Length: 517
Image (cartoon, rainbow, N blue to C red):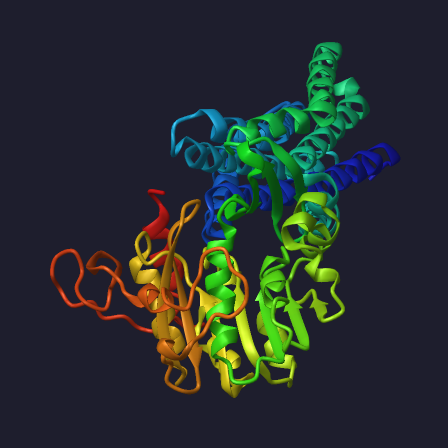
């Protein structure tokens, strides 16, 4: 192989590695978009990976029809990947904001299979071109495949540790699209002697690159305006962390709202109803509520309610995302709402997974408050399993009590009672409560203890805006349309089974219950 052939084959190998990095980034980016906008992360990642690989198979098959102009074909495929992939996140947010319901899912799956097909189209062409320039077929195939697979690993690492946390989904897509086009332009220049009408292709590539650079500089601001359409109030703070997307909005009457991955966590207009029921029955019931554990509650509001009790000596708050607890400690509006609770000397913060914390921690607690997001994906589902509640039981002292937020018994009836059944399956005694929270609707809680619970003995002695001792027992009364322990809408007895790590059926129940809300 002469020097010129070696140079060209080297270009092909490097191009293969770089476009593979870009391809895997787009693949996981589409999964992340689906997880954030459509929910159920495991489902969306499974679908996008499957569709992307199917697209690659289709593209590889279609590449057989390209018999000449291999490099030019590769260049235009790269232009296509750069343009379509680069604008993918930007257009996804626009479609979600303005198009009819369901369009966003169709668009995401369509663009996933399209970019997958273009990516799959490239590799056979590069292998054939490497063989054409004088490399033996077995060597060219092995080397191009090595570059492709190694590039896949690098792409995945770059997305997880650099692009998503530092650039977000919109800028990441534009940036990777620019890299695709730059690779195409470099290959176009190096193989210019083989290409007719070189300047026509070069100008087209430069125009696409300029469009992507404009998107890189200004696309996130436009996408922010699209995303604003998804919320009824102006966005005050938007942050994409390693774990979630945090959004604070400010509405009429100074209504501060927190959204995590698009799901409402509280409204300052009525959060007290939720948090008073979460905190006060539990602490009032516990025999000696000195040591309190809060799982979740990174906004600091539950901790504020706990601090009303002078007998509480220590509050351990476990929230996975350090960005959430940092925001609660620094944002002026959140500080006003939580009264600076997370800076109190009694509060100790651990930014850890709640499951991991309970597995590794040996401390016992008088009160355990579980204020976690709803179980809408696999990572959250494990925090609503029999195994997790067994850990809760093992950390709860005799005479202590736990309270678990458990979604809506009205809108997600089977979900609520499945959570209750999962808690009861650990041997804990349970009491079921629900309260009307206007921003949420009818919301449910599961109270648990090692001993039978008698709400008639609970006395609320601290200041409250909603909850009283006299009304507490009434919260344990459920209507027929809220109680899956009786019958379903066809009059059949409902059999519920605990949610477990091995059988995580709660996710599907949750998705079915909330798909129309």
